[in-house]
Every structure is written in C-alpha cells, then in structure tokens.
Amino acid sequence: PKCDADRIHIANDFIKATEYRIPLLIDPVSKQNPFSEVYCPWPIRFYVIDHMKKLSYIAEPIEGSFPLELIRNALD
Image (tube, rainbow, N blue to C red; front, side):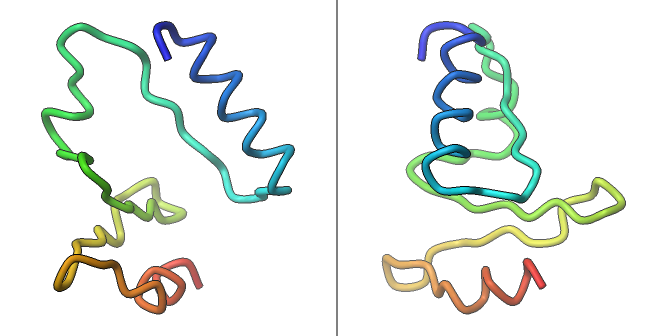
C-alpha cells in the first residue's frame, strides 16, 4: 500500500472476508516508518495488545515457524 487509504481499504477487505472481530490497528504510511523501527515486524511478527493497550505478547519464530497454540493462548 502506498497511502493510508490503501491500508485501510485492505484491512476492511480482510475484516469482511474473514469476519474478523478483534480490533485491528493500522500504522500510517511514513517515510521514517516508526512502527518498523520500533517493532521490527519483518518478515513476520505477531503482537497481542491487551485491554490496557499494552503489548502482552510478542510472537517470535521458533525453528523457523510460529507455534500457533502460543498465539491462541495469548488471545484468550
């Protein structure tokens, strides 16, 4: 996506296609890309933000994959 509107459109398409019900956050397009600098989400990272708006879980790959059970547990 090249602009914030594109990111929002993609997120809305995802929500509709998957009936996703958990709040989804979209970081704005920025040349400095502060989200990437702070959280290093590439290639893939999963973050869980709790009801207090704090990071409660940061998934990291184990032997090249993510144990989905750990992510599911973090969402409960």
